[in-house]
Length: 169
Figure 1 (tube, rainbow, N blue to C red):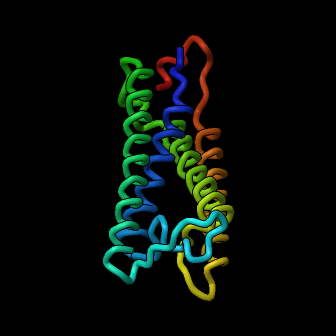
Figure 2: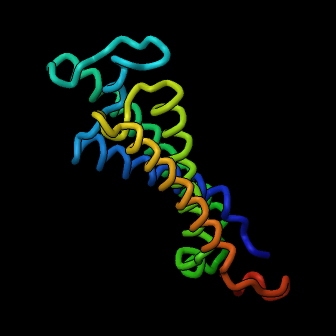
């Protein structure tokens, strides 16, 4: 029987997508932090300017909480995946099904995080400034492309009959 790896792969993709966001956009490029847009948010969170040491410390702490969430998602996804693997582990790790669903998870991360944090709560934006709405929309478009591309990737994986299903992995 073929192991069901869609859910573990999606959870893994959510965590990996969050890591890319947190490492690249928060730390390397420093375009935003978790609370860097609270001067114009929609829920009344106190503003912590990244241009002050106390403000940067608070933003860095919330970036850390965000990374705890993404790290936990990666661990949960890996644990679930491992528990569902058969003796044909190498085929699962090379599977278009696994990486397609992981890409779907990354896209879902972008869509949920983008809609909630950038648009509904407005606690930060991809890149603040005169074109911040376009950056936020681009982030959502990228997420939608990841979901669609991942769906197509896993869907296009070679399917086999039920008797040979285990050997396909």
